[in-house]
Image 1 (tube, protein in one colour):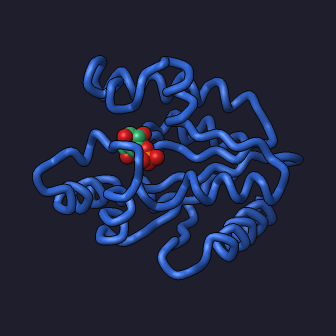
Image 2: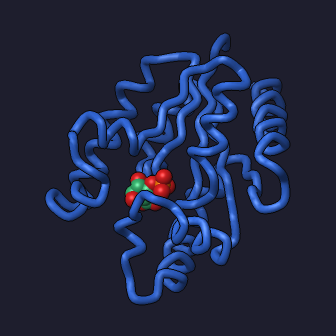
Amino acid sequence: MPQSNIILTGFMGTGKTTLGRLLAKRIGYEFIDSDALIEAQTGKTITELFQIQGEAAFRKLESELVEDLAQKKGLVIATGGGLVLNPKNVAALSNTGQIICLTASPEEILTRVAKAPNVRPLLQEEDPQAKIIELLHHRESVYQQFPQLSTSELSPDKLVDEILNLTNKFRLKD
Ligand code: S3P
């Protein structure tokens, strides 16, 4: 499929946005970050959307965005970590390209999200580490349906190589 999209998913703090941007630059694709696009379209931050409208309304916005993106080609898409919990979103995105799941340990995730400028409403808990472990456990089977890539050991440039290797491998199998 020419210009198939490459979709990066995985838990919060696994490097989807950072690597997605690098990958898009490397292969000359447009980069889309689902959270950033939802914020731009609504004029509200993800935190405001969760607080004012609730998680269900946010998930609806994600699905509407997926419907839109599923019409396009030549994109690298970094999804919000919960977007693939909806099987309809997975089906629509899978039709347009390959989904790769980035992973990291709970400790690394905590360190990365603590440093990040964007607030993750789901982790605003007394014990964020416990919440990360709980959510990871809950989402395990969803994330495991995709080829996985740990973002702990390699440099960003090497990780982009690995993502391209994975997408080629899975495309050849089609
Ligand atoms: C969420 C992940 C966030 C954002 C929202 C919910 C999730 O995106 O969509 O806070 O349910 O995992 P990132 O994965 O980019 O942090």
